[in-house]
Image 1 (tube, rainbow, N blue to C red):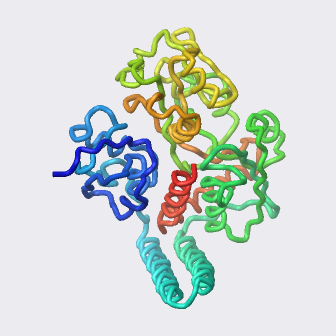
Image 2: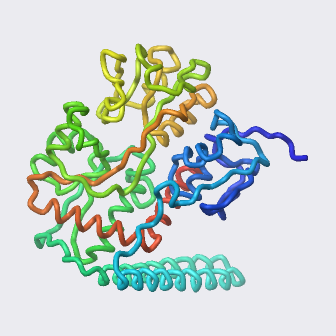
Image 3: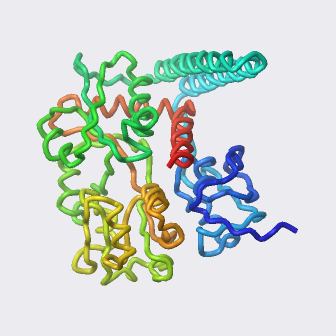
Length: 409
């Protein structure tokens, strides 16, 4: 009989790669060191562990922070959770996608074989083989993207002959920061989308860490053509939006979502707020959400003043300190940022995520509606994103970045 070992689902996996071979539409037996969040990253390329938690509440129970070695989990099919890959619309696009996949797979197989052979020689040979493999795989991906791009009969967007200027900011791991690999997951996605859809288009990405200046000054003056990543409010329901979110909808156009994050709530263990099932239970509480972050998901469920009291410090860390000293009752924040901050601040097992009340928030590229090239820029990026999703490159980029974040904090 296996020991009934209890594991925190928010902790990093101690046994690297335990869940790496898992696929959707299958089952998985929990191993020592696993976490729901890591398993969800490996299978679905997202940190939204509720995908697995909701499908296995009868096995896990009501607390996703506790999973047991030996329990067998059902991994839902992509189609059942709305994550099925986009299908090619024409026969030509389907053929191109198949050829592209075979092209990249062949390059990856050759690269793996070359690296294995190099291991028989020396460490220097392995380093050289990996460098050559990277070049060969990138060349194959470029050729594959051209196949998919050329099979699309739609008219290509036209951007004036000039260098595009895009702006983002730092301190938003794993998405954007100059110290991260590829300057962040989201930066890598945007650059790759531009490369796949319009390889000849000149562009530059600049970091300005004062995020508020993007929307207050730099984008309205058209000093930059696009900014990322920003959440898209529910623009179709303006009456339910705050003034800032309504202004965002009226002023900017949005790309298709390049990534989605989980916006959720955290509370002290034992407060009751970490387990509640309804937003109504938050009435009368003080909720902390960092300044500048959209309130749209809170507004949409009635969590606005005077029903609740709102605290808006500059830093997410300030919210968690306020939670621990009793100044606030709840922290509303993106899950991936919370997990990092809670671990770094030493609040693990004392601050708990509520698994029942969360919202999926898309992260998009925005262009100002006064920019004459704005819509063409977004259309180009959307085309590049579609190519990446069809070829599997999007998943590779996301999974690699999320693994790096979990391993390095």
